[in-house]
Image 1 (cartoon, rainbow, N blue to C red):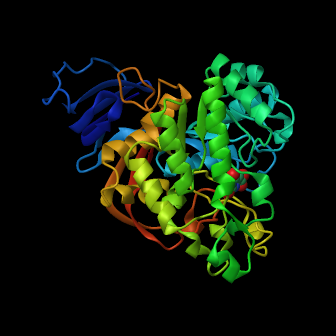
Image 2 (cartoon, rainbow, N blue to C red):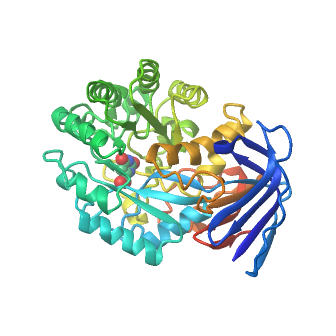
Length: 438
Ligand code: DOR
């Protein structure tokens, strides 16, 4: 099948394209892009329309943005083991609704993805039921216990694109050193969940005046920053490929900025909730805003925005962490951590464009091009000829009210319920399917 997307505002950082034009898709691959590119300063040479007998579907994308399908390098799909929270089918449907055509799923399932047979299960299930591409992330340590390295090599061969003990830090520095050494040999990023458990233990929110006022145990910013510092040191020592997950504090941004200046092989991500909400969201003990790392302060938000702007933070990922309603209804101390993020990430991130923090081009870099580059998946995150045809079409002017109950994800746990946001995904093209909303 052929799909022609006409007259949209195409943004493709991989080719410096930022202008009105057409995208032709054929048999699931980008066949041709004709647009004004920044470098060319003029419309690229018109080519004769490709002759083909296959059916042609034309999409009018006037007044819309046409961008490479978004890539989320940090989601929890919960399958196998926690299908009551989410499945590969519902999680990828939520991804598509949110404009994502590729998601990378964290290993904290049951069983944990710490060996090739679990990796193989996820890949097989995703091929059967996934609405978008699913790329698994393997555990760093067996059982995510932090004691013994998992089968990195065999999981890599089976298709893992990164390794992480996300949800848990690797407290043992020697193990972190070893996996960073492995990351060079297997050319794969290590996504670090930075949390010093000895400082965070028992904590449920940011440590500060508010935690004292609310009578909740706090987690100091230093619990994250000490581990960011340690991992940067280990990346320096080994030359391994370090990616810092869910950055939430000013101090972490500073440490990463400094490390990058010194040439350390480090990249970083943050999530929409860390630049959209402060700890104030917890004033009414709303468990939907309980997340790890915790929501921080205004100052941290400003630093994160600055880090996104100057390139210290390469990626916006969701850390999509769906939980069952009944679990989030528990007492604050006992409710699980996490936010269902796939269906609000793009409009929340578009606020950064409205505020002038990012250009549209930088936003696409952080939500598509950079994740592809970090993960080494060159067939995605681009509209170059021959790339996989994951494409997102969005109307950035359209206002939408967040309605958790209408989420496609099983996880309705969002602190953004009722928010009115600008930016609606109108069409997501993934795996040869066109998903369309009004
Ligand atoms: O809030 C979080 N939820 N942070 C994590 O690191 C793990 C995640 C989960 O698995 O629920």
